[in-house]
Image 1 (tube, rainbow, N blue to C red):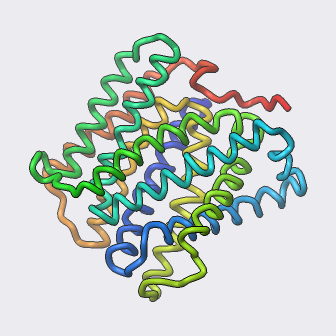
Image 2 (image 1 turned 60 degrees about the vertical axis):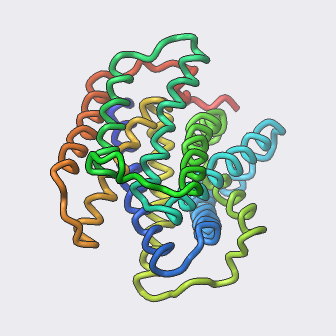
Length: 309
């Protein structure tokens, strides 16, 4: 399998797991009384510790090399605070004020923002296939979330604010950690980013103070969020972006609402509307389109694999 196709696979699987995580988060926030800040703090702390433990098993004290250079320390702090923490908090805050589908729709403004940023930076218009992919993906997500009715996406002012901030944060964590992943790899960069972000959030949300109603279902949902929706999903997604670039990677994240939709069908007994099927077809056609017509790999958009330190 080529680097591009494996990157597509990693990105899509990571996005699918995010959909499962978002639905599990909605269950905890709306049915078990948790808050978005508490949930994200616990999620990031646990995921960071797990990732760093895996890295330590392989690299031992080498995991601390991230802190050797001042620029890397600054990049790591920005990645943790403005990328990971900000992204997860605003996403789950949007869910708490609306639902996982609405949060996904608002967050999916990110590919447009990324494409605009890279087009301006590289002084080059987006390719036709990328523009077509955005149209298909946004249309598919719209159909999944609203069944084609413009009046059904009625959200609060808080949900709109957090959703737009969530889209901005996605741009940051797609583009900002490029040097870190290039120099230290996906798992180590993600592990430190998660741990630092979790510590920062813990100052405000105090995860040691247990809140909400806890039963087997709540614990299972939390484990899904930490392991599948954080450790594995972020690792796969960032590695995918590492191989195929931020623009295509963010487009392929449109696979996220697919898993959320199917999970709601099998878990909550939701029936599929014909517009859901059309939306799913549009999103899958986006993945197929980008796989057949890969974007040329450029240093300005794709993180190189060779370490330079």
